[in-house]
Length: 227
Image (cartoon, rainbow, N blue to C red):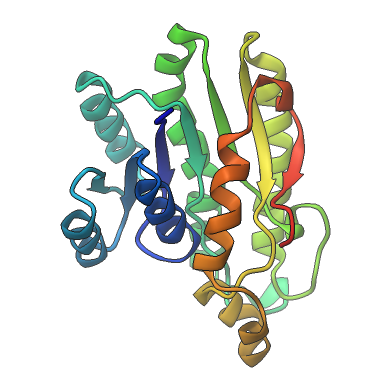
């Protein structure tokens, strides 16, 4: 059965590959990103998707996006908070203030804004799954990525608390996608990033895994198998 999935951060990386895999399987994808050119490419390739230029760190932009979609009857079955930034490798005390703020604004506040403006419509149906993308660095730590770790640990806590607030029939899940060769991994690992699977490979495993999530998974911290 076809599902409607809302995915943030579809301009590149995991978000883009996951969106394309789901669209290829016949599902409805509502996506957002900040790269207008990339979104235009997606629209041209996948006319049955719906892609919008939205910065999740801007609450007004998210509110307007939600209003537009929900007014058109586009209430998601799955809400996937994927959009994220990582700081350039540096000890915490050397991270520029504006970089720290940007990581928090996208990775944490952006997740809150998307939930705030889309979840009420899902609650009316008492159905739906919220998947907040976490990380291995949301359950462990490494040096020089403290801002990113902080936001992903926060996502784990936010998701578990949200899970306790949801009615029966719904779920909130923190999902560690695994280690995949993306531009973000290049930033952290350098040339070592090339040894890891591509986003396209990952999406082929992640899509069916995500689609099987249900109310029985509420409050769980999960990882995409094999990654």
